[in-house]
Image (tube, rainbow, N blue to C red; front, side, top):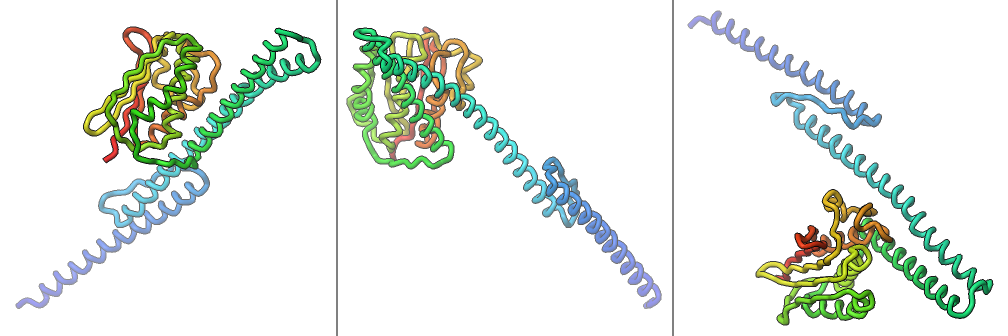
Length: 307
């Protein structure tokens, strides 16, 4: 046996291993230096910083994790800025939506107090002032509800109930309103039970907002309510025969504070449909809207049925 040859190859192998480990060590040292610089950069606010790594690097898991953290923080920052911008827009809208009817309300009341108007004209001023007060109350209620939903602080009381019976009870309170506003109403609700898990107050708010949206904004004269089901879900359709919604606005109507500048640009605060969507989502449902081929707008809500 040639011990010299064995010793030579053993030494050569050891040298190769040492060189390999030294290379790995240098690469790790280099990567640690890059990681340190990247963390310092991210700490100073540069969330666009990413660490390039190879699949063979020993630090790849750490690099991937740092990149993921930076990406998540960047996404959170973007959402925060969007939310901040939305709240600024909300404050601007609040200033207008509150100040305008409030100024008008004060004007009518001052005219009554100073006896500028008397008799039938006074009664008319009182009626208008009352309408302004109701508008302010509705706006404040909508705002409070939207803030609670946005902050995820809304408390729901879900219970198993008959969707059809509950819907009929809610619609019954709206029939005098439809008739007063000269709206023809068509109600298609089956007699059988549709058992579903709902928060009664939230569902009432959903229908109330959709009916009010039809009366105030659709410029129509008819509202249609249809409820149906299959084995897994229930569907509620609320439609009107008005002017519809411009196609460019359809993808945005459920966004908070969004108001169309065309067919539905009359009084409103841009919160009603946003609240509807949030409440539908809280029930595990979905809502969508489309324009009817025959004119008007169709809102479709789908709720999962109770198991």
